[in-house]
Image 1: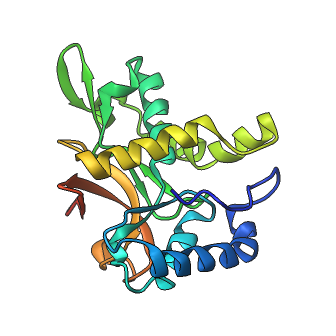
Image 2: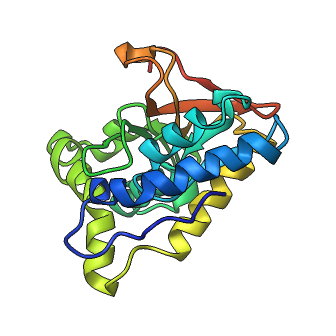
Length: 217
């Protein structure tokens, strides 16, 4: 778990942390390259997480790049919570919400493939909510701005929710995701027209300690 980074403060974007944290993650990558086992699984939490994961991987060339991930599970958990509240169901009854892109205000939370259990039956979330305008506007902007809202409320970035998301991420990486899609920032293989080798959040499934990007979602 790489959490050692300058934290974001009120009025800052995650990109504002870049110059301060590049040096930190360069050094962490070099240290991993020198002393870590080559099957180590690395989760970058410190922001900007996608960029930091990319830098860390580049400075640890002896470790497979698929072993480096950035945390977008916090965004996924926030998105699931928003949908569950809208539908009046427990968060555990919503699955397959996707976070695309960067862990930043440009991320895109996507409920188009999400499913919900209501009354013992599984339904597509868009049909259950039946409000396209909400899903395209309020839902998206609320999730995108949630980190800033937390900072404005408590004058520091999220703590317990981030720790919970990190444990969720690692649990699924080690134990598997079952029939659920989960969001991880991983090194792109060009899926969905994304540039290769950037760290981008995709929907993935995980089995036997290996993640696989969901195709055609």
